[in-house]
Amino acid sequence: MPNRNLANIRNHYQRDALDWSNLPSDPFTAFEQWMEAAIAAKLYEPTAMALATVDNNHQPHARIVLLKGIDTGFIFYTNYDSPKGQEIAHNPKAACTFFWPDLERQVRIEGVIAKVSDSLSDTYFSSRPKDSQLAACASAQGKVIADRAELESNFDKIAQQFANKTITRPANWGGYRLTPTRFEFWQGRPNRLHDRLVFRLVHDAWQQERLSP
Ligand SMILES: Cc1cc2nc3c(=O)[nH]c(=O)nc-3n(C[C@H](O)[C@H](O)[C@H](O)COP(=O)(O)O)c2cc1C
Image (cartoon, rainbow, N blue to C red; front, side, top):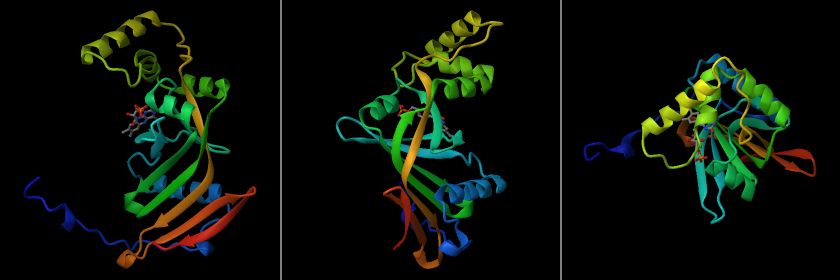
C-alpha cells in the first residue's frame, strides 16, 4: 500500500463514559447489558469474539468465533479436533475479546475453557440449519485439502447419506465454555483517555479496579 498512510487514520471517541456508577456490579450482568446494547445498535455480528489460545510451543493463536450462550461462562461451538481444540486440550487458559466499533466499546474476558456437556452440544447442534449440520460433518476443520472441490464433494456425499434422515452431531464437534476469571470493560473517550474497568476474581469474589488507558 505505497500511497496509503495508515498512521494518519484516526478516530475520536466520544460516545459515552464508563464509571462504576453506570456499570452493574456483577460482570456477567454488565456484559449482558453491553451485549444487549450491541444487538440494539444492529451491529453486524455482535456476538463475534476473537478467541485466543496457546499451543504447546507457547505460540498464541487468535481467531473469531461466535458466542452462542452465556451461563456460568461464555459458550461457543467448534470442531474439537481443530487446531484450537488441540490447543485447548493442551492448555485450557484462553481469552476472548469483543469489539463493538459503533459503540466505541471493547470487552476482554480471560479464563479457563472446558467442553460443555454432550447434551448441551446435542441441543445446539439440532437447532442449527441442516446445511450447517452437514458442513460440521463434512469439514475436518484445519486439515489441508487439495481444493474447494474436495470440500464440496464431501458435503454432497454427506448430504446424500443423510437425505431425509436426522443428522446426528459428530463426536468431534461441540461446545466449549470459557469460565472467566477476569473481565475488562473499555469505553473509548476523548483525547485517548479511555475508561477501563476491570473485574478480577479473587477468592470467589469479583474485585474491581480502574486501569490507566
Ligand atoms: C464472523 C466469523 C465467525 C466464526 N464463527 C466460528 C465459530 O463459531 N466456530 C468455529 O469453529 N469457527 C468460526 N469461525 C472460523 C474461525 O475463525 C476459524 O477460521 C476456524 O474455527 C479455525 O480455527 P483454528 O484453525 O484456529 O481451529 C468464524 C469466523 C468468522 C470470521
